[in-house]
Amino acid sequence: MLMAGSFHPAIAPFNSLPSGSRSGRLQPLRPGMRRRSRLHGRSRVRLPQAAPLSSSLPRKRRRLGLAIAAALADAGLPAGVLNVVFGNPALISRTLLQSPITRGLTFTGSTEVGKQLGAMAVQTMKRMTLELGGHAPVLIFGDVDPEAAAVSAAAAKFRNAGQVCTSPTRFFVHESIHDRFAATLSELADAIVVGDGFQATTRMGPLAHERRVESMERFVDDARARQIRVSAGGRRCGHQGFFYRPTVLSRADEACLASNVEPFGPLAATAPFRDLDDAIRLANRLPFGLASYVMTHDLRNASAVSEALQSGNVVVNHWQASLPETPFGGHKDSGIGSEGGIEGLQESRRSNM
View (cartoon, rainbow, N blue to C red):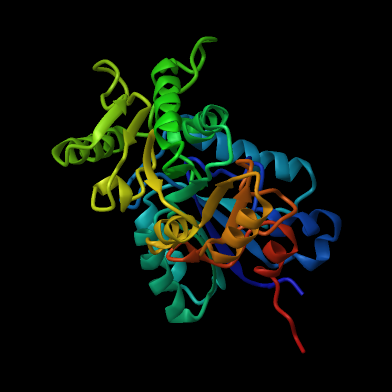
């Protein structure tokens, strides 16, 4: 049975609204549109998250949240099943999670904030589905065309200006083709037109806010201080808005900031690897495991890496880390539980034996 008579807060960031492909946060509501009686008395509270201490949301983002709620109501969702809450995320989260009425939590965001919310939720033994930080590795083996791999990698990396939880960020490329891959990726990054998304020629828009631009500057400053080559970008665009050039750090070492902290922006770091064991070591080095990517024509490499990578989603020879019909979730500090598929529905179900 679905957890009835309770509230289930779903805290979503700006880049993961329920209108996305997975719609994992609203997935448990779908059966209620067909069998309303099973959901009466249960409410899913969706709190759009701007930042942990933000007091407001941009007006367009509020409109989108309300438009989604209105569409669900028009589709027949019973009144009161979905509630959209705006305000101070920290205050609202604390109020909801300390209440014994709420019986579950769904959150997408940083590992730091997820752990804070989880610590509050566990005080009243709430179920949790947490999709947290990623810093996804990409293993590109020597049997692939490095230029072709770079073309697809650029499209995946700079989608939404890199502000995607599954965005490929740490590119580990076999030493025999690393420099060719890095050179092509840098050329493609330099060619991307950054600007107003309503202009036909624009290929990448702005970052979410000024803090993201400042964060990108810290990554680049750290790399330059370590004599790491900034082979593309590395600067903001103009003096207005939150625009930053697509950036590539070539031959980034393991100690630099970009190799250890998720940029969550238009920054890619490349590094060569020697063999299979070295590639797996580099990919598994961090305490994150949301998504990882493998590029190879050798099924033995694909099979070995898929088994060895400590990641909730291992993607071979493409860049789609999640689908509505498949479970999606992280390992280690990248989260708890799953969204999507039957597994996502089970997160909001309770079995009475």
